[in-house]
Length: 158
Picture 1 (spheres, rainbow, N blue to C red):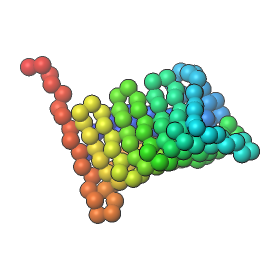
Picture 2: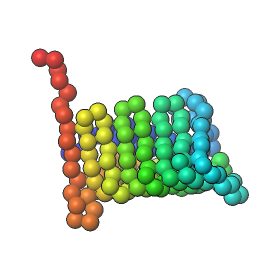
Picture 3: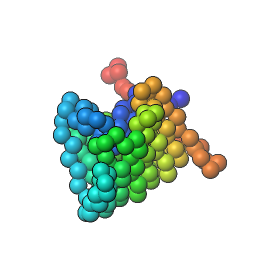
């Protein structure tokens, strides 16, 4: 069974990629500012695309990818991060090839050799789907592969 706390915290962190699409982009993590950077920026209409070492930072959460597309203050419902996607929070690190956040259904999908770590605990699979509203999560193996994990019980000091 997948540890809900691990997936919940990871997916909340992934919510960072959706922040600029929400009406009040400062609402996540207590109105903290969102900092972004990239080697190149494209602005088309009201959409900002970060290309090359793309990065979003808010508080202690950081999203890095080769490209982050669809950042939009006007209510865009889809933000994509692609190429060497890394999400780092104080408790988790998530790696994958692509992440997509859809605001209309509060769903984050991370695909491509997904590795989710929290401390010494690790879950690997091909696809992670997480609903931020219901806090439900599912990791899939994909392509005949299996979901695998290693969990280390916390020591009680006895």
